[in-house]
Image (cartoon, rainbow, N blue to C red; front, side):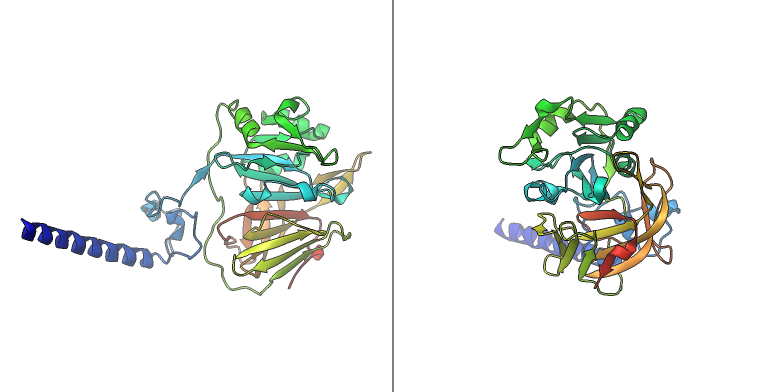
Length: 341
């Protein structure tokens, strides 16, 4: 019996080693990028045409469970006034941050969170603008904010989106002592989860929505400067090669968020109305810069309609290749404000 048991154990060990070797060889043939963390396996097949159904024969069979993840996202409007920055919370857990100008050309964030992995607190929460709405579609239709411009509130109602507006749902937002108003409103995980139970059909999307993989060759740019023409608002990113992410400094405040991708889009920005509100072109196309792994890539962005996602390509028309992890997207009126070095 002992002999049979030993022989059986030896056979199992040999079989496991053979299977392991075959798996390693199979994976190596696919040339998987080292940071393909969340990319579906189908996107990694070398030289395949995604329009050919046979190219997707492996796309539904992920070798590792963390690949090909799907998420339900929600968007939270976060203030970026210089008095609010020291109190910002939750940004490090966002999967995507979209940064736009608001009145006075101070920026504000639309931070996207996986509804299944929310931070304890998010904020400070501020009001909505229509371009935040259109830029968020089709990744989410759920917005947490306190107030908004008439155009933004009308846009939400016209499109039938889910708006958890703190003007009417104030009991779900927490006012923190010691934080100067109007920057003292925060959203807790418990409140967000309670409100999300009201959403009957939470959208589920594949994330990330763009191509990820190994960084192609490109000019080095380990420091990024975005000039807002005011030392209180200027932004500097410094690449941390050990963490493979960027340290963001806004004025004199270092952000808790350390994005792996810094994306800058150039578009038309116009000041309209008596309150200095802005009209920012979200649809259309324009120039773009992608920074990742201490490198800079020039290209183009396009968005054919509010309901369609952004498309990002290099100057040859090929999709930008992003690093897996957080992306911080800033929209400016001219790329002349952006310097990579």
